[in-house]
Length: 305
Ligand code: HEC
Ligand code: HEC
Ligand code: HEC
Ligand code: HEC
Ligand code: HEC
Ligand code: HEC
Image (cartoon, rainbow, N blue to C red; front, side, top):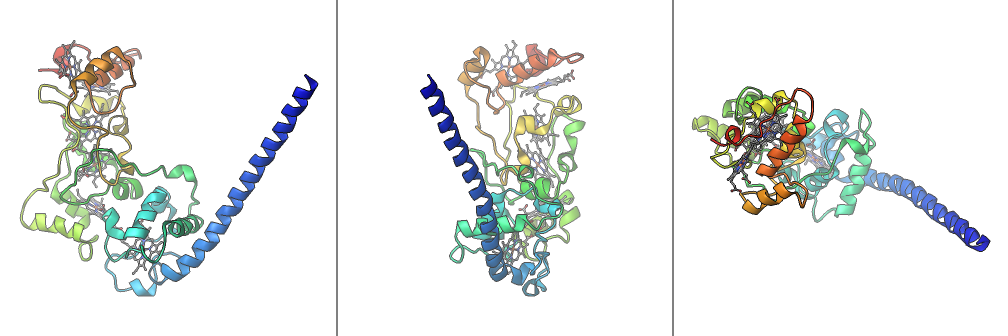
Protein backbone atom coordinates (compact mmCIF):
# COMPACT_ATOMS: atom_id res chain seq x y z
CA UNK A 1 0.00 0.00 0.00
CA UNK A 2 2.82 2.43 0.95
CA UNK A 3 4.67 1.36 -2.12
CA UNK A 4 1.59 2.06 -4.16
CA UNK A 5 1.16 5.59 -2.70
CA UNK A 6 4.88 6.30 -3.22
CA UNK A 7 4.75 5.23 -6.83
CA UNK A 8 1.62 7.35 -7.26
CA UNK A 9 3.25 10.52 -6.00
CA UNK A 10 6.38 9.84 -8.04
CA UNK A 11 4.18 9.53 -11.11
CA UNK A 12 2.49 12.79 -10.11
CA UNK A 13 5.86 14.57 -9.89
CA UNK A 14 6.81 13.28 -13.32
CA UNK A 15 3.47 14.33 -14.84
CA UNK A 16 3.66 17.82 -13.30
CA UNK A 17 7.25 18.15 -14.51
CA UNK A 18 6.27 17.22 -18.06
CA UNK A 19 3.33 19.66 -17.99
CA UNK A 20 5.54 22.50 -16.71
CA UNK A 21 8.19 21.87 -19.34
CA UNK A 22 5.47 21.68 -22.00
CA UNK A 23 4.10 25.04 -20.83
CA UNK A 24 7.51 26.67 -20.81
CA UNK A 25 8.46 25.41 -24.27
CA UNK A 26 5.09 26.58 -25.63
CA UNK A 27 5.81 30.13 -24.35
CA UNK A 28 9.36 30.13 -25.67
CA UNK A 29 8.09 28.65 -28.97
CA UNK A 30 5.65 31.54 -29.40
CA UNK A 31 8.44 34.04 -28.82
CA UNK A 32 10.63 32.26 -31.34
CA UNK A 33 7.77 32.22 -33.86
CA UNK A 34 7.13 35.94 -33.38
CA UNK A 35 10.83 36.72 -33.90
CA UNK A 36 10.94 34.60 -37.07
CA UNK A 37 7.69 36.22 -38.20
CA UNK A 38 9.12 39.68 -37.66
CA UNK A 39 12.06 38.94 -39.97
CA UNK A 40 9.76 37.48 -42.64
CA UNK A 41 7.43 40.46 -42.30
CA UNK A 42 10.27 42.96 -42.80
CA UNK A 43 11.30 41.21 -46.00
CA UNK A 44 7.93 40.36 -47.60
CA UNK A 45 5.26 42.65 -46.20
CA UNK A 46 6.84 45.90 -45.01
CA UNK A 47 7.28 47.35 -48.54
CA UNK A 48 3.47 47.67 -48.81
CA UNK A 49 2.19 47.45 -45.23
CA UNK A 50 4.97 49.69 -43.82
CA UNK A 51 7.69 48.93 -41.28
CA UNK A 52 5.23 49.57 -38.41
CA UNK A 53 2.42 47.62 -40.25
CA UNK A 54 0.19 50.67 -40.37
CA UNK A 55 -0.52 50.27 -44.08
CA UNK A 56 1.77 53.09 -45.18
CA UNK A 57 4.52 51.31 -47.16
CA UNK A 58 5.99 53.15 -50.15
CA UNK A 59 5.23 50.36 -52.67
CA UNK A 60 1.49 50.72 -52.04
CA UNK A 61 1.36 54.53 -52.02
CA UNK A 62 -0.37 54.58 -55.42
CA UNK A 63 -3.01 51.93 -54.62
CA UNK A 64 -6.67 53.01 -54.48
CA UNK A 65 -7.39 50.43 -51.77
CA UNK A 66 -4.69 50.94 -49.17
CA UNK A 67 -3.15 47.91 -47.44
CA UNK A 68 -4.87 47.19 -44.16
CA UNK A 69 -3.52 48.75 -40.97
CA UNK A 70 -2.57 45.46 -39.33
CA UNK A 71 -2.06 47.12 -35.93
CA UNK A 72 -5.66 48.33 -35.59
CA UNK A 73 -6.97 45.85 -33.03
CA UNK A 74 -10.55 47.01 -33.52
CA UNK A 75 -10.41 45.65 -37.09
CA UNK A 76 -7.97 42.74 -36.92
CA UNK A 77 -8.51 41.18 -33.49
CA UNK A 78 -11.74 39.51 -34.59
CA UNK A 79 -10.21 38.04 -37.75
CA UNK A 80 -9.46 34.32 -37.38
CA UNK A 81 -5.81 33.19 -37.84
CA UNK A 82 -6.96 31.08 -40.76
CA UNK A 83 -8.19 34.17 -42.64
CA UNK A 84 -4.72 35.75 -42.36
CA UNK A 85 -3.04 32.53 -43.51
CA UNK A 86 -5.36 32.16 -46.52
CA UNK A 87 -4.85 35.80 -47.54
CA UNK A 88 -1.06 35.49 -47.18
CA UNK A 89 -0.82 32.18 -49.09
CA UNK A 90 -3.45 32.79 -51.78
CA UNK A 91 -3.74 36.59 -51.97
CA UNK A 92 -6.61 39.02 -51.30
CA UNK A 93 -9.11 37.35 -53.72
CA UNK A 94 -9.14 34.20 -51.54
CA UNK A 95 -11.30 36.26 -49.15
CA UNK A 96 -12.89 38.58 -51.74
CA UNK A 97 -10.30 41.32 -51.12
CA UNK A 98 -8.36 43.21 -53.80
CA UNK A 99 -5.76 41.35 -55.91
CA UNK A 100 -3.23 44.09 -55.06
CA UNK A 101 -2.68 41.94 -51.93
CA UNK A 102 -0.50 39.30 -53.70
CA UNK A 103 -0.26 35.53 -52.99
CA UNK A 104 2.94 34.34 -51.31
CA UNK A 105 2.58 30.62 -52.07
CA UNK A 106 5.95 29.60 -53.51
CA UNK A 107 7.78 32.20 -51.42
CA UNK A 108 6.45 31.29 -47.98
CA UNK A 109 5.09 28.06 -46.53
CA UNK A 110 2.10 27.87 -44.15
CA UNK A 111 4.31 27.60 -41.06
CA UNK A 112 6.04 30.83 -42.05
CA UNK A 113 2.66 32.47 -42.68
CA UNK A 114 1.62 31.45 -39.16
CA UNK A 115 4.84 32.89 -37.75
CA UNK A 116 4.00 36.22 -39.40
CA UNK A 117 0.50 36.07 -37.88
CA UNK A 118 2.02 35.39 -34.44
CA UNK A 119 4.20 38.47 -34.91
CA UNK A 120 1.33 40.68 -36.15
CA UNK A 121 -0.84 39.68 -33.17
CA UNK A 122 1.78 41.26 -30.87
CA UNK A 123 1.34 44.67 -32.58
CA UNK A 124 -2.44 45.01 -32.17
CA UNK A 125 -3.84 47.95 -30.20
CA UNK A 126 -6.04 47.26 -28.25
CA UNK A 127 -4.11 44.07 -27.44
CA UNK A 128 -5.13 40.76 -28.99
CA UNK A 129 -6.47 37.92 -26.84
CA UNK A 130 -7.00 34.50 -28.50
CA UNK A 131 -10.64 34.25 -27.38
CA UNK A 132 -11.47 37.29 -29.55
CA UNK A 133 -11.14 35.33 -32.79
CA UNK A 134 -12.91 31.98 -33.08
CA UNK A 135 -12.00 29.73 -36.02
CA UNK A 136 -13.31 30.26 -39.56
CA UNK A 137 -16.45 28.22 -40.23
CA UNK A 138 -16.96 26.50 -43.57
CA UNK A 139 -20.40 24.84 -43.63
CA UNK A 140 -20.91 21.75 -45.75
CA UNK A 141 -23.41 23.43 -48.08
CA UNK A 142 -22.41 26.94 -49.08
CA UNK A 143 -23.41 27.89 -52.63
CA UNK A 144 -21.17 30.03 -54.83
CA UNK A 145 -22.68 33.50 -54.95
CA UNK A 146 -22.65 35.93 -57.92
CA UNK A 147 -20.38 38.24 -55.87
CA UNK A 148 -17.95 36.98 -53.23
CA UNK A 149 -19.55 38.90 -50.36
CA UNK A 150 -17.67 38.02 -47.17
CA UNK A 151 -19.48 38.24 -43.81
CA UNK A 152 -16.13 37.84 -41.98
CA UNK A 153 -15.03 41.21 -43.41
CA UNK A 154 -18.36 43.05 -43.05
CA UNK A 155 -19.94 41.60 -39.91
CA UNK A 156 -16.74 40.24 -38.28
CA UNK A 157 -14.00 42.80 -38.87
CA UNK A 158 -16.01 45.98 -39.56
CA UNK A 159 -18.86 44.98 -37.20
CA UNK A 160 -21.62 46.27 -39.46
CA UNK A 161 -24.77 45.20 -37.55
CA UNK A 162 -26.69 42.29 -39.09
CA UNK A 163 -29.85 44.34 -39.27
CA UNK A 164 -28.18 47.16 -41.18
CA UNK A 165 -28.40 44.80 -44.16
CA UNK A 166 -31.18 42.41 -43.08
CA UNK A 167 -33.41 45.23 -41.96
CA UNK A 168 -36.78 43.47 -42.23
CA UNK A 169 -35.89 40.85 -39.59
CA UNK A 170 -37.41 42.86 -36.73
CA UNK A 171 -40.49 44.07 -38.57
CA UNK A 172 -41.48 41.36 -41.04
CA UNK A 173 -41.62 37.66 -41.83
CA UNK A 174 -38.55 37.65 -44.09
CA UNK A 175 -35.21 39.07 -42.91
CA UNK A 176 -34.57 40.44 -46.40
CA UNK A 177 -31.38 40.92 -48.37
CA UNK A 178 -29.80 44.35 -48.95
CA UNK A 179 -30.56 46.20 -52.19
CA UNK A 180 -27.80 47.09 -54.66
CA UNK A 181 -28.33 50.65 -53.51
CA UNK A 182 -27.45 49.67 -49.95
CA UNK A 183 -24.15 48.15 -51.16
CA UNK A 184 -23.48 51.24 -53.28
CA UNK A 185 -23.99 53.44 -50.23
CA UNK A 186 -20.51 52.29 -49.15
CA UNK A 187 -19.02 50.97 -52.39
CA UNK A 188 -19.40 54.00 -54.66
CA UNK A 189 -15.88 54.61 -53.40
CA UNK A 190 -14.63 51.68 -51.29
CA UNK A 191 -12.88 49.15 -53.53
CA UNK A 192 -14.44 50.42 -56.76
CA UNK A 193 -11.15 50.93 -58.57
CA UNK A 194 -9.13 47.82 -57.86
CA UNK A 195 -11.41 45.05 -56.60
CA UNK A 196 -13.18 43.12 -59.42
CA UNK A 197 -15.74 41.70 -56.94
CA UNK A 198 -16.75 45.22 -55.98
CA UNK A 199 -16.77 46.34 -59.61
CA UNK A 200 -19.50 43.74 -60.16
CA UNK A 201 -21.74 45.76 -57.80
CA UNK A 202 -21.28 48.77 -60.09
CA UNK A 203 -22.16 46.61 -63.12
CA UNK A 204 -25.46 45.52 -61.54
CA UNK A 205 -26.13 49.11 -60.51
CA UNK A 206 -25.47 50.47 -64.00
CA UNK A 207 -27.68 47.77 -65.57
CA UNK A 208 -30.40 48.56 -62.96
CA UNK A 209 -30.45 44.86 -62.02
CA UNK A 210 -30.71 43.32 -58.62
CA UNK A 211 -28.01 40.86 -57.57
CA UNK A 212 -29.25 37.25 -58.03
CA UNK A 213 -28.14 35.93 -54.60
CA UNK A 214 -28.58 32.18 -54.16
CA UNK A 215 -30.89 31.32 -51.28
CA UNK A 216 -29.40 29.19 -48.45
CA UNK A 217 -31.89 28.79 -45.58
CA UNK A 218 -35.40 27.81 -46.60
CA UNK A 219 -38.36 26.01 -45.05
CA UNK A 220 -40.89 24.24 -47.34
CA UNK A 221 -43.71 26.30 -48.88
CA UNK A 222 -46.39 24.79 -46.64
CA UNK A 223 -44.57 26.12 -43.56
CA UNK A 224 -44.76 29.63 -42.08
CA UNK A 225 -41.66 31.07 -40.43
CA UNK A 226 -41.77 34.73 -39.32
CA UNK A 227 -38.54 36.46 -38.18
CA UNK A 228 -40.21 39.27 -36.26
CA UNK A 229 -41.48 37.41 -33.16
CA UNK A 230 -38.14 35.61 -32.81
CA UNK A 231 -36.08 38.79 -33.04
CA UNK A 232 -38.48 40.56 -30.67
CA UNK A 233 -38.16 37.67 -28.19
CA UNK A 234 -34.39 38.14 -28.26
CA UNK A 235 -33.46 34.91 -30.07
CA UNK A 236 -30.07 35.66 -31.65
CA UNK A 237 -29.52 35.23 -35.37
CA UNK A 238 -26.65 32.84 -34.63
CA UNK A 239 -28.87 30.44 -32.66
CA UNK A 240 -30.55 29.47 -35.92
CA UNK A 241 -27.97 30.36 -38.59
CA UNK A 242 -24.66 29.60 -36.86
CA UNK A 243 -21.70 31.99 -36.50
CA UNK A 244 -22.31 33.85 -39.78
CA UNK A 245 -19.65 36.46 -38.89
CA UNK A 246 -17.03 33.73 -39.16
CA UNK A 247 -18.25 32.26 -42.48
CA UNK A 248 -16.45 33.50 -45.60
CA UNK A 249 -19.31 31.85 -47.50
CA UNK A 250 -22.69 31.48 -45.82
CA UNK A 251 -24.03 27.95 -45.75
CA UNK A 252 -26.03 25.41 -43.80
CA UNK A 253 -24.81 22.23 -42.14
CA UNK A 254 -27.23 20.35 -44.34
CA UNK A 255 -29.57 21.44 -47.08
CA UNK A 256 -32.85 20.07 -48.33
CA UNK A 257 -35.60 18.21 -46.63
CA UNK A 258 -35.08 14.82 -45.06
CA UNK A 259 -38.27 13.26 -43.67
CA UNK A 260 -36.66 10.75 -41.25
CA UNK A 261 -35.02 13.69 -39.46
CA UNK A 262 -38.38 14.95 -38.27
CA UNK A 263 -39.33 11.56 -36.91
CA UNK A 264 -35.93 11.05 -35.29
CA UNK A 265 -36.05 14.50 -33.74
CA UNK A 266 -39.50 13.80 -32.34
CA UNK A 267 -38.38 10.66 -30.55
CA UNK A 268 -35.03 12.33 -29.71
CA UNK A 269 -32.56 9.58 -30.31
CA UNK A 270 -29.89 12.03 -31.35
CA UNK A 271 -29.13 15.71 -30.82
CA UNK A 272 -31.01 18.24 -32.91
CA UNK A 273 -28.98 19.57 -35.80
CA UNK A 274 -29.42 23.05 -37.19
CA UNK A 275 -31.06 22.59 -40.59
CA UNK A 276 -34.49 23.86 -39.59
CA UNK A 277 -36.39 20.63 -39.09
CA UNK A 278 -39.82 20.60 -37.46
CA UNK A 279 -38.50 18.77 -34.39
CA UNK A 280 -35.98 21.54 -33.95
CA UNK A 281 -38.60 24.32 -34.10
CA UNK A 282 -40.95 22.50 -31.74
CA UNK A 283 -38.19 21.61 -29.29
CA UNK A 284 -37.20 25.22 -28.83
CA UNK A 285 -40.84 26.31 -28.55
CA UNK A 286 -41.44 23.77 -25.77
CA UNK A 287 -38.28 24.86 -24.01
CA UNK A 288 -39.15 28.59 -24.24
CA UNK A 289 -42.73 28.04 -23.13
CA UNK A 290 -41.43 26.63 -19.87
CA UNK A 291 -40.23 30.19 -19.19
CA UNK A 292 -42.53 32.84 -17.85
CA UNK A 293 -44.59 34.88 -20.29
CA UNK A 294 -43.56 32.98 -23.42
CA UNK A 295 -46.11 31.45 -25.75
CA UNK A 296 -44.44 30.04 -28.80
CA UNK A 297 -46.95 28.03 -30.87
CA UNK A 298 -47.15 24.24 -30.73
CA UNK A 299 -50.38 23.89 -32.71
CA UNK A 300 -50.10 22.70 -36.30
CA UNK A 301 -51.98 25.52 -38.00
CA UNK A 302 -49.76 28.35 -36.78
CA UNK A 303 -46.77 26.87 -38.59
CA UNK A 304 -48.70 25.21 -41.44
CA UNK A 305 -51.25 26.95 -43.60
C1 HEC B 1 2.16 44.62 -53.12
C2 HEC B 1 1.71 45.16 -51.86
C3 HEC B 1 1.45 44.19 -50.72
C4 HEC B 1 2.32 43.29 -50.16
C5 HEC B 1 3.75 42.99 -50.55
C6 HEC B 1 1.59 42.69 -49.05
N1 HEC B 1 0.34 43.19 -48.95
FE1 HEC B 1 -1.11 42.63 -47.61
N2 HEC B 1 -2.44 43.87 -48.49
C7 HEC B 1 -2.14 44.73 -49.55
C8 HEC B 1 -3.34 45.46 -49.89
C9 HEC B 1 -3.46 46.51 -50.99
C10 HEC B 1 -4.35 45.02 -49.02
C11 HEC B 1 -5.80 45.51 -48.94
C12 HEC B 1 -6.74 44.62 -49.77
C13 HEC B 1 -8.18 45.00 -49.59
O1 HEC B 1 -8.55 45.56 -48.55
O2 HEC B 1 -8.99 44.73 -50.50
C14 HEC B 1 -3.75 44.02 -48.16
C15 HEC B 1 -4.45 43.32 -47.19
C16 HEC B 1 -3.89 42.41 -46.33
C17 HEC B 1 -4.60 41.68 -45.30
C18 HEC B 1 -6.11 41.71 -45.04
C19 HEC B 1 -6.37 42.45 -43.77
C20 HEC B 1 -7.80 42.74 -43.49
O3 HEC B 1 -8.04 43.43 -42.49
O4 HEC B 1 -8.69 42.36 -44.23
C21 HEC B 1 -3.67 40.94 -44.64
C22 HEC B 1 -3.91 40.00 -43.46
C23 HEC B 1 -2.40 41.19 -45.25
N3 HEC B 1 -2.56 42.07 -46.28
C24 HEC B 1 -1.19 40.63 -44.82
C25 HEC B 1 0.00 40.74 -45.53
C26 HEC B 1 1.20 40.05 -45.15
C27 HEC B 1 1.36 39.22 -43.90
C28 HEC B 1 2.13 40.34 -46.11
C29 HEC B 1 3.54 39.78 -46.22
C30 HEC B 1 3.63 38.33 -46.27
C31 HEC B 1 1.51 41.22 -47.08
N4 HEC B 1 0.21 41.44 -46.69
C32 HEC B 1 2.13 41.72 -48.20
C33 HEC B 1 -0.93 44.87 -50.19
C34 HEC B 1 0.20 44.12 -49.95
C1 HEC C 1 -21.61 50.04 -44.23
C2 HEC C 1 -20.69 49.97 -45.35
C3 HEC C 1 -20.75 48.77 -46.28
C4 HEC C 1 -21.87 48.22 -46.88
C5 HEC C 1 -23.32 48.62 -46.73
C6 HEC C 1 -21.36 47.19 -47.75
N1 HEC C 1 -19.99 47.09 -47.65
FE1 HEC C 1 -18.79 45.82 -48.69
N2 HEC C 1 -17.18 46.50 -47.66
C7 HEC C 1 -17.19 47.52 -46.73
C8 HEC C 1 -15.85 47.67 -46.20
C9 HEC C 1 -15.41 48.70 -45.15
C10 HEC C 1 -15.04 46.71 -46.85
C11 HEC C 1 -13.55 46.47 -46.63
C12 HEC C 1 -12.78 47.20 -47.69
C13 HEC C 1 -11.41 46.63 -47.85
O1 HEC C 1 -10.67 46.57 -46.89
O2 HEC C 1 -11.09 46.22 -48.96
C14 HEC C 1 -15.91 46.01 -47.77
C15 HEC C 1 -15.47 44.99 -48.62
C16 HEC C 1 -16.24 44.40 -49.58
C17 HEC C 1 -15.77 43.42 -50.52
C18 HEC C 1 -14.39 42.83 -50.54
C19 HEC C 1 -14.29 41.83 -49.40
C20 HEC C 1 -15.39 40.82 -49.46
O3 HEC C 1 -16.34 40.93 -48.66
O4 HEC C 1 -15.39 39.98 -50.34
C21 HEC C 1 -16.85 43.06 -51.31
C22 HEC C 1 -16.86 42.08 -52.47
C23 HEC C 1 -17.99 43.82 -50.84
N3 HEC C 1 -17.58 44.63 -49.79
C24 HEC C 1 -19.27 43.68 -51.35
C25 HEC C 1 -20.40 44.28 -50.78
C26 HEC C 1 -21.76 44.03 -51.22
C27 HEC C 1 -22.16 43.10 -52.35
C28 HEC C 1 -22.57 44.80 -50.44
C29 HEC C 1 -24.09 44.87 -50.45
C30 HEC C 1 -24.75 43.59 -50.24
C31 HEC C 1 -21.72 45.51 -49.51
N4 HEC C 1 -20.42 45.17 -49.74
C32 HEC C 1 -22.18 46.40 -48.56
C33 HEC C 1 -18.28 48.25 -46.37
C34 HEC C 1 -19.59 48.04 -46.75
C1 HEC D 1 -23.14 44.61 -45.43
C2 HEC D 1 -24.34 43.81 -45.51
C3 HEC D 1 -24.53 42.59 -44.63
C4 HEC D 1 -24.32 42.47 -43.27
C5 HEC D 1 -23.76 43.50 -42.31
C6 HEC D 1 -24.73 41.14 -42.92
N1 HEC D 1 -25.18 40.48 -44.02
FE1 HEC D 1 -25.97 38.61 -44.07
N2 HEC D 1 -26.05 38.67 -46.10
C7 HEC D 1 -25.72 39.77 -46.88
C8 HEC D 1 -25.76 39.39 -48.28
C9 HEC D 1 -25.43 40.27 -49.47
C10 HEC D 1 -26.16 38.03 -48.32
C11 HEC D 1 -26.35 37.13 -49.55
C12 HEC D 1 -25.03 36.59 -50.03
C13 HEC D 1 -24.43 35.58 -49.10
O1 HEC D 1 -25.09 34.59 -48.76
O2 HEC D 1 -23.29 35.79 -48.68
C14 HEC D 1 -26.34 37.61 -46.94
C15 HEC D 1 -26.77 36.36 -46.53
C16 HEC D 1 -27.09 36.02 -45.22
C17 HEC D 1 -27.76 34.81 -44.82
C18 HEC D 1 -28.23 33.69 -45.74
C19 HEC D 1 -29.50 34.09 -46.46
C20 HEC D 1 -30.14 32.92 -47.17
O3 HEC D 1 -30.14 32.92 -48.40
O4 HEC D 1 -30.59 31.99 -46.50
C21 HEC D 1 -27.89 34.86 -43.47
C22 HEC D 1 -28.54 33.82 -42.60
C23 HEC D 1 -27.29 36.09 -43.03
N3 HEC D 1 -26.83 36.77 -44.12
C24 HEC D 1 -27.19 36.47 -41.70
C25 HEC D 1 -26.43 37.56 -41.28
C26 HEC D 1 -26.07 37.80 -39.91
C27 HEC D 1 -26.48 36.91 -38.75
C28 HEC D 1 -25.35 38.96 -39.88
C29 HEC D 1 -24.67 39.61 -38.69
C30 HEC D 1 -23.76 38.77 -37.93
C31 HEC D 1 -25.27 39.44 -41.25
N4 HEC D 1 -25.92 38.55 -42.05
C32 HEC D 1 -24.67 40.63 -41.63
C33 HEC D 1 -25.40 41.03 -46.41
C34 HEC D 1 -25.08 41.33 -45.09
C1 HEC E 1 -35.60 31.10 -34.73
C2 HEC E 1 -34.67 30.89 -35.79
C3 HEC E 1 -34.17 32.10 -36.57
C4 HEC E 1 -33.66 33.28 -36.09
C5 HEC E 1 -33.52 33.72 -34.64
C6 HEC E 1 -33.25 34.05 -37.23
N1 HEC E 1 -33.53 33.36 -38.38
FE1 HEC E 1 -33.13 33.97 -40.26
N2 HEC E 1 -34.11 32.33 -41.02
C7 HEC E 1 -34.66 31.33 -40.24
C8 HEC E 1 -35.41 30.42 -41.10
C9 HEC E 1 -36.20 29.22 -40.63
C10 HEC E 1 -35.27 30.92 -42.42
C11 HEC E 1 -35.95 30.37 -43.68
C12 HEC E 1 -37.26 31.12 -43.79
C13 HEC E 1 -38.12 30.74 -44.97
O1 HEC E 1 -37.79 29.85 -45.73
O2 HEC E 1 -39.17 31.40 -45.13
C14 HEC E 1 -34.44 32.12 -42.34
C15 HEC E 1 -34.05 32.91 -43.41
C16 HEC E 1 -33.19 34.00 -43.32
C17 HEC E 1 -32.70 34.78 -44.45
C18 HEC E 1 -32.99 34.54 -45.92
C19 HEC E 1 -34.34 34.86 -46.40
C20 HEC E 1 -35.13 35.94 -45.73
O3 HEC E 1 -35.13 37.06 -46.21
O4 HEC E 1 -35.79 35.66 -44.74
C21 HEC E 1 -31.89 35.77 -43.94
C22 HEC E 1 -31.15 36.83 -44.73
C23 HEC E 1 -31.89 35.62 -42.51
N3 HEC E 1 -32.70 34.55 -42.16
C24 HEC E 1 -31.19 36.45 -41.65
C25 HEC E 1 -31.39 36.47 -40.27
C26 HEC E 1 -30.87 37.51 -39.38
C27 HEC E 1 -30.00 38.67 -39.80
C28 HEC E 1 -31.30 37.19 -38.13
C29 HEC E 1 -31.08 37.98 -36.84
C30 HEC E 1 -31.50 39.36 -36.86
C31 HEC E 1 -32.08 35.96 -38.22
N4 HEC E 1 -32.12 35.57 -39.54
C32 HEC E 1 -32.67 35.30 -37.15
C33 HEC E 1 -34.52 31.18 -38.88
C34 HEC E 1 -34.08 32.16 -38.02
C1 HEC F 1 -34.24 28.98 -30.54
C2 HEC F 1 -35.65 28.97 -30.28
C3 HEC F 1 -36.63 28.92 -31.43
C4 HEC F 1 -36.54 28.21 -32.60
C5 HEC F 1 -35.41 27.30 -33.05
C6 HEC F 1 -37.74 28.47 -33.34
N1 HEC F 1 -38.56 29.32 -32.64
FE1 HEC F 1 -40.38 30.02 -33.23
N2 HEC F 1 -40.52 31.13 -31.56
C7 HEC F 1 -39.57 31.21 -30.57
C8 HEC F 1 -39.95 32.23 -29.62
C9 HEC F 1 -39.17 32.62 -28.36
C10 HEC F 1 -41.17 32.77 -30.08
C11 HEC F 1 -41.97 33.94 -29.48
C12 HEC F 1 -42.71 33.55 -28.24
C13 HEC F 1 -43.42 34.76 -27.62
O1 HEC F 1 -43.34 35.84 -28.18
O2 HEC F 1 -44.05 34.56 -26.59
C14 HEC F 1 -41.50 32.07 -31.31
C15 HEC F 1 -42.66 32.30 -32.05
C16 HEC F 1 -42.97 31.65 -33.23
C17 HEC F 1 -44.19 31.84 -33.98
C18 HEC F 1 -45.35 32.71 -33.53
C19 HEC F 1 -45.59 33.88 -34.39
C20 HEC F 1 -46.67 34.77 -33.84
O3 HEC F 1 -47.01 35.69 -34.55
O4 HEC F 1 -47.14 34.54 -32.72
C21 HEC F 1 -44.12 31.04 -35.10
C22 HEC F 1 -45.14 30.88 -36.20
C23 HEC F 1 -42.86 30.34 -35.02
N3 HEC F 1 -42.19 30.72 -33.88
C24 HEC F 1 -42.41 29.43 -35.97
C25 HEC F 1 -41.19 28.77 -35.91
C26 HEC F 1 -40.73 27.84 -36.91
C27 HEC F 1 -41.48 27.42 -38.15
C28 HEC F 1 -39.49 27.43 -36.53
C29 HEC F 1 -38.55 26.46 -37.21
C30 HEC F 1 -38.27 26.68 -38.60
C31 HEC F 1 -39.19 28.11 -35.28
N4 HEC F 1 -40.24 28.90 -34.94
C32 HEC F 1 -38.02 27.91 -34.57
C33 HEC F 1 -38.41 30.46 -30.47
C34 HEC F 1 -37.91 29.63 -31.46
C1 HEC G 1 -43.21 25.46 -34.60
C2 HEC G 1 -43.60 25.19 -35.94
C3 HEC G 1 -44.26 23.89 -36.29
C4 HEC G 1 -45.31 23.30 -35.64
C5 HEC G 1 -46.00 23.76 -34.36
C6 HEC G 1 -45.67 22.14 -36.42
N1 HEC G 1 -44.84 22.03 -37.51
FE1 HEC G 1 -44.93 20.59 -38.93
N2 HEC G 1 -43.27 21.32 -39.81
C7 HEC G 1 -42.59 22.46 -39.40
C8 HEC G 1 -41.44 22.64 -40.26
C9 HEC G 1 -40.41 23.77 -40.16
C10 HEC G 1 -41.46 21.59 -41.21
C11 HEC G 1 -40.48 21.35 -42.33
C12 HEC G 1 -39.41 20.44 -41.79
C13 HEC G 1 -38.31 20.13 -42.71
O1 HEC G 1 -38.21 20.69 -43.79
O2 HEC G 1 -37.52 19.26 -42.32
C14 HEC G 1 -42.62 20.78 -40.90
C15 HEC G 1 -43.01 19.64 -41.60
C16 HEC G 1 -44.20 18.97 -41.41
C17 HEC G 1 -44.68 17.90 -42.23
C18 HEC G 1 -43.99 17.32 -43.39
C19 HEC G 1 -43.37 16.07 -42.85
C20 HEC G 1 -42.16 15.78 -43.47
O3 HEC G 1 -41.22 15.48 -42.72
O4 HEC G 1 -42.10 15.93 -44.68
C21 HEC G 1 -45.88 17.49 -41.72
C22 HEC G 1 -46.79 16.37 -42.25
C23 HEC G 1 -46.13 18.30 -40.56
N3 HEC G 1 -45.10 19.20 -40.40
C24 HEC G 1 -47.24 18.17 -39.76
C25 HEC G 1 -47.43 18.84 -38.58
C26 HEC G 1 -48.51 18.58 -37.64
C27 HEC G 1 -49.60 17.52 -37.83
C28 HEC G 1 -48.36 19.44 -36.59
C29 HEC G 1 -49.20 19.55 -35.30
C30 HEC G 1 -49.16 18.38 -34.48
C31 HEC G 1 -47.18 20.26 -36.90
N4 HEC G 1 -46.65 19.87 -38.09
C32 HEC G 1 -46.72 21.28 -36.08
C33 HEC G 1 -42.93 23.29 -38.36
C34 HEC G 1 -43.96 23.06 -37.45
